[in-house]
Image (cartoon, rainbow, N blue to C red):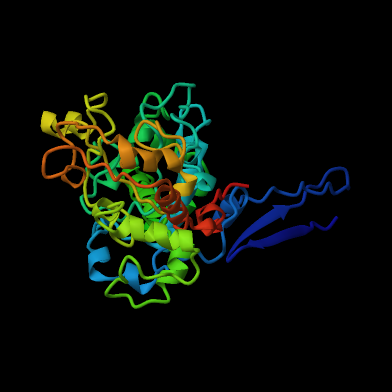
Length: 398
């Protein structure tokens, strides 16, 4: 009986694997060899679990309006020269951000406490950790995290850089409960990660440092610039900024009044801390939440009582979506926040100068009911609805 030789050739992606199957001869009957199961190639490993585009999304060169590329705004950016945002790096960071495998029992991801629909914050006062425990403070939005010039992260600024910060929740005994060696081992066993690390860093080596770099790239890419405020601002010269009382044509009369209240020093005076187009502040502040320290904040980090009660200032962009407010989530609504600055600022010893009058007393804005409502209306013009659904920042897992 003549021997037969069968050859199965299959191609997956740009690679090919050839498998030669020899025949069996048994009592003059040829038994067909079982069809081998193809070993998935890298792209298969990614596509099996992730919805990622063939060409990565644009994270590195987003089409920002001119007023967000001015020198004073560029000067706010805390991206180190050693970790620029790249499309493949941020893509890997996006996968890591949403992957519950980063927690000890596969129940919590970064996105569990930083929900896209909630402005990348959490709509509860304190977030749940992997074993049911609660975080110590309210979850801070990551929007415009790149625009904080001192580069420190967490409410109390205990992380000197974003690269430091991204690994800390993973190792926190309440939040995610992992160790870095265990994390590396775990990710190496997941078939999609070597491919993504190869694309991001040029080889497939998985280290905690690279995990930190990729997560930081993704977080820094989450930039808001498509609100109704931006629609109006984009139609005006980049510099100088228009005066506080310049009406925006797409605003209501109430929203324009709220903008004027926000920007005018002797009205709301909000721009003293949130005065740039990113609506961030350059450093930590004590905003008079309590007359006596209830949470030391930055003071505990620096071991300096003169910094007690100071906390990082987050962006006001998408603030409508990020309730509850403040480091402890004490305010449920924007109306409560505005009322605090209108009548409730406490005379803490470390109260920030922007909230202290020349006579030493706390500055209360004493806004009328109409102006308080107008200020809330203006803050809502900073809402970028696209951020809540933008696929670039959404869960990539199938």
